[in-house]
Image 1 (tube, rainbow, N blue to C red):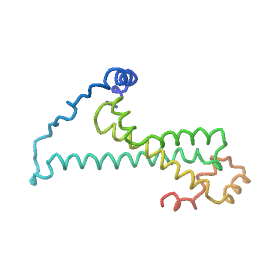
Image 2 (image 1 turned 180 degrees about the horizontal axis):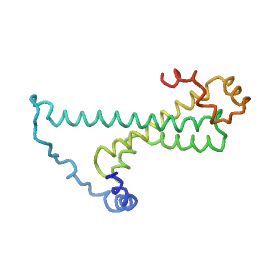
Image 3 (image 1 turned 90 degrees about the vertical axis):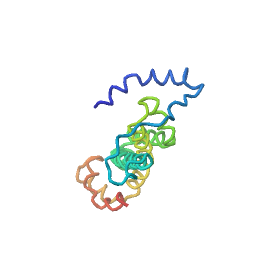
Image 4 (image 1 turned 135 degrees about the vertical axis):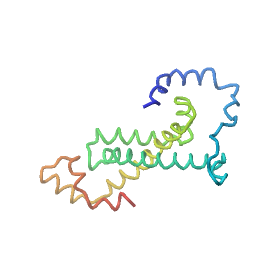
Length: 175
């Protein structure tokens, strides 16, 4: 919740970045950071390289989990055999747009809006992960057999209500 205050000037930060901050580059952002005093028995666990590596692994783990959850939510809406075209087409366009920007550009965008820090990295990798995992998942949903869907619809279920009853899809989603 403490990061929501950082979003207030996001559009203003973007306009300042494009109009004033592009040139000359500010090299002061590359200066060394201060780290806490080492309390470990093995000094390696307090080194800048180790702390940076652990922060990177944490960012990757959290963004992959969040991206997977977001992709599962959106991919069922993007599958043409589960939702009508007026829902699936905009979701597909959104997933394609998110996937078309590389994660480095997402990172630059979130650094401009939020500033440096792990939150920018998590959001950048989450957006990119939602894009590519969403595409993979909606292709799995579209490639499934149509017999269970037709049986569900014959019993009176609407398209979204058929999704939870598809227990045979679990191995395809996990693999």
